[in-house]
Length: 575
Ligand code: ATP
Ligand code: MG
Image (cartoon, rainbow, N blue to C red; front, side, top):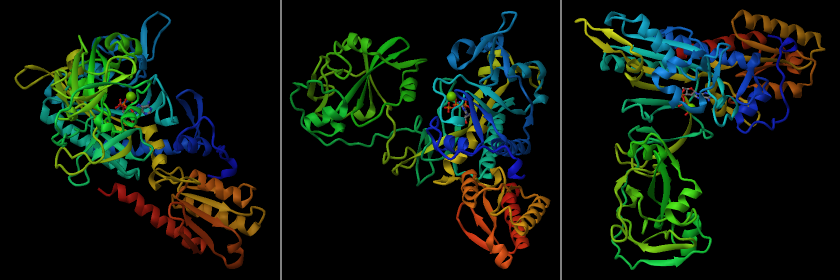
C-alpha cells in the first residue's frame, strides 16, 4: 500500500476526548473516529487490525471444531420475555418498537436467539455435541461508555455457545474453548492470564476470564506466584490469617469527633492505624437494610456480599436511609445500639479488640468497642477484597495483585436457557432432557485496544507482528531523488511479492514527519531508504520494539524480513 493514496489521517496532538492511552493512540494513528458516545467508525488502518484479530479468532474456533453462524442483531421481545431477561436485563438492553408497534431489542448477547434456533432444530442425542459461534456486532447501552473501544456501546464480539447431553460433555466443550482461547491470545502476541471468575447468580458453575495484563486494566487479579492460583479479585477468597494479639477489653467510651467521618480522618484524630477502626456500611439488600461491618483498612467486596446474603439486588443506602436507620448522617454509623437492622461482619472483624466505631449520632464515635460484649452480629462472612500479601487460599503463600483487561470469558451455563426456552433432546431410550449449555465470548474490538494498552511507548503503538496492520513501514526520505525512488519501488515490489505487508511512505514530506508517523502507527519494522543508499548502496532496517538497527543491502533486507516474519507467523500456527 502506498501512503500517498491511503486514508490515514494521523494527529500530532493528543485528542482531548481520550483518557486512556489506547484510545488516544487509536485516534492519533487514524484507526478510529467517534460517531456518538461509545460508537466508533473503523478507518482502513483500524479495520486491518480488527480483521487480523478476527481471522485468528476464526481460525482457532474452526480448528476447535466450532461452526460459524451469523445471528440477527435485532431480536424480538418475546424471546427475552421467555427467558425472563426482558425484565432482568435493565437499561443496557436497548429496546424499541417497529412500525407495527412490536417490541424489539438490539442483541447485547445471543443466548436467547441461539437457544431458540437449537430448540427448533436439535431433537436427538445424535445431534450433540455442537458448538456454534459468530463474530458480529453487539449493542449494550452501557451506563458509562468510555476508553474508546475498551467499553463501547456498539462493539464486535465473538460469541460461541456449546450444546451437550451431559456434564462430562460440557466439561469437554469448555476445555476445548479454554484451549482455543489460549491459542488465540498467544497468537495475537499478548501477555495474558486466565483467572477464575464470578458466576453471578446463574448458579455455581465454572467460569474463567481471560485477562490481558496491563497496568491500566479495570480488573484486579489475585495471583499466587508460588502455586499458580489466579482469580478475579471479585472472587478471590480473602484468608483471615490474623491472630489478633491478646488484649484486655477496656471500658467503652463515647468521644466527640466533630465533623470527623472518613476512616483516615477518624484514625488520624485518635492517632491509631485504620486497622483499629471498624466501618459500618448500610446496604439495601432486596429492599431490606443491612449493616455490614468491615475493618477500616479493608475494602468491601459487593460481589461477595451479594453472594453471602443470596441477594438479587444490593446497593449502598442513600443518605436519607442512613439517617433514618442510624439517626445520624453518613459517617457516624456503628453497630452499638443499632436496632431493627440485621448486622453482619467480615471475618477479619472477628477477634479484633478495643476498636473504634461510629456512635449513631452526629459527631461522635465509640472507642474500645468489643464484640460480643457491646453488640450482636448475626454472621461472619468473607466480605472483603483480598489484599497484597494476604495468603493464597490454595497454598497459603503471599498473594500478588496485578491488573488486567478482560478480553474473553468462558462460562458453564448449564440448563438456565434450555429450561426456560424448552430446548430438549431425546436420549437413546427416548427420554427427554434439557440440553446443557456453555457460552464463550471474546471482545474482538476490545482486544485491539488491550493490545495497545500492553504494547506502546512514548512515541506510539508497538504492534505484535501477527496483528500489526502492516509488517513494514518503507520510508523514502527524499522522494525527489530519482535513485531513491527507484530502489524504493523495487523494494516495495519484492516485499509485496513475498507477501510481506508493506506501507510505503512515498509522500513528499520531511523525514522527521515520516519517522514520527511510522513510530505512531507502530509497524514492527521500519525500512529506511536515504543518504546511506546514495553513499554505499545500503538501507537501514529498524525494529520498532527493540530499536535494533541493521544496515543491509536492499535484497538482504527483503530476505531477512521474509524469514523473520514467516518464522514468527509459524510460531502460532505450528500445531
Ligand atoms: P465487563 O465486565 O467488562 O462489562 P462483561 O462481563 O459484561 O464484561 P461478557 O458479557 O462476558 O462481558 O462479554 C464477553 C466479552 O465481550 C468480554 O469479555 C469483553 O471482552 C467484551 N465486552 C463486554 N462488554 C464490552 C463493551 N462494552 N465494549 C467492548 N467490549 C466488551
Ligand atoms: Mg458488562
